[in-house]
Structures are given as C-alpha cells and as structure tokens.
Image (cartoon, rainbow, N blue to C red):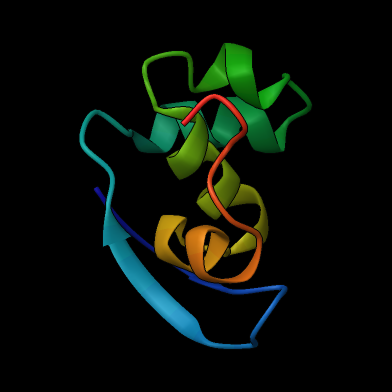
Length: 69
C-alpha cells in the first residue's frame, strides 16, 4: 500500500510503498491500538514514517543511525 505523509522534521511530503500494510491495519491504529500491535508486520522505520512522516533517509541524515548500527 502506498502511503503519503508530511515530515515533521522538514515539512517535505513523501509517498512510500509499505509492503504488507492494509487499510484495516491503519484503521485499527487510528482507532486507538498501539502502532506496534496494529502494524506488527511493518518495520519500525516504516511505522515511524506512518506516524510522523519522517522517512528512513531523513532519520539517517538528520539524526543518524541507531547506536547499534
């Protein structure tokens, strides 16, 4: 499923394809489920994009990789 969000960091609007994402999963999250439960098959980086619009590349450029990387 393609999803479009605007980054909270840059204001840039991006569209990403999130494999495995369904409208039902989004609806469950929007209705109050924890995102890690509603979108359990989706990577942490893409869940972050869905919540904040921040793309994985923006995280790497602005914040840097996670400490274990």
